[in-house]
Amino acid sequence: MLRKLFPGGFSNSPYNSFKLILVAEGYLANETARFIGDCVDLIEALFGTAPFGLTRMYPGWLSIYAGFTPSGQSGPPINTPAPANCTEFESSLATTTGVLSLNQLKINAWVAGETLLADSEETPLDQFFTIGAPASGFDLTTHVRSIEVCHAT
Image (cartoon, rainbow, N blue to C red; front, top):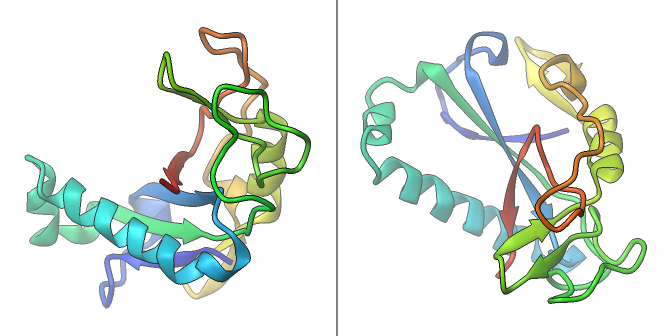
């Protein structure tokens, strides 16, 4: 089940808020705390950017969740295609373009199998997100279309 990171102590329903899902990609099994710390840093940077700073005073419109699944290697392969199952979503990074490519079928399977707490009930994540069809980026690789990625650096 996804872990809710924001807003803490405020009971907003995911049915009535914009949902941002931060997903671990390239984090090893022993790096859960690092991933959550990176997510908190990302949230702080977001709230330091106008107009998102107002979210601290009016948090009901946004729900931020984190999903951690460990990868078999730390970070994505750089400038080379990802071998099967090297990371949860088989990501690879092209440094010339800055494109992080992901396997859409792996993302779809993750979304279909994940849950979050909605109004005190565990609810499938795919009730909130559309499972994406495989899509091609500029380099003809699969990329994420329906969820956000918090990536290890």
